[in-house]
Image 1: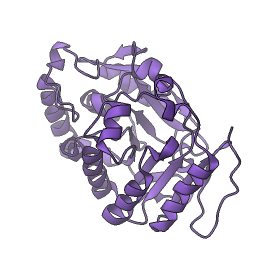
Image 2 (image 1 turned 90 degrees about the vertical axis):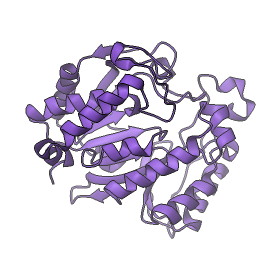
Image 3 (image 1 turned 45 degrees about the vertical axis):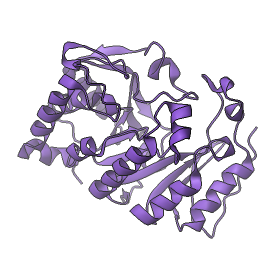
Length: 323
């Protein structure tokens, strides 16, 4: 199965998306923050990113969901900075603070994509791409000219504008968004994004419309579709019940979900007593039970040793107690 962007390259959809998204940069409204700075003149808003994308690192990543990483790894590009400001961010050194990394031209970014393909990676995995999609699309065009032909993964925190996601129609093969919060006040308190739930739901619905349920080939590799990540936070800060209800009723009970237990206190978590601990086994099992309640049976659970297949509502994994 060929990546969707190859047809988009041939029929002009990619060129139109490049032109439209680049124009938006002149008064930036790429994400819900709509800072309205002229990034084409290197002005910087919330995401602290001007005309060029900044890359922190890239590698063949083996820690994603099994059909994304496969045996040869996911060709992951970590972009510096972010349009969220999570107080518990595990990547705060480059997503916030000084934004460690290197500014790259579109040709340099294209070469990174081609190098990852050369490693044998199953896909190109764009981590925190929201604020640099115009730059990514320009690089994608260059990479296609030089032979890029593996799926594109849009891996984001989920704070998106649905209209921007619509511009990606025919370009993105795999969507891998978070659904982080169900409540505005919570999103504001912990990620400075008080309107996160509304924008997140609209964007995820558009992602689902475009890509549908995850498609996994005979080799166990995902070629198309949507996986929703949900990070279980202490004290049900994330609002798991409301999010799972939305997924089941507004998307599909067949939606693949990655239920994540990896939260640990870091960055500014110490300023919030409720975030100053790992989640308990009981909290994680409660989140699993909520999935089952809403008939959500596809996806993965996360244990201390990594990601394992979640086999369905009638089979409960033997979870290990986390410290």
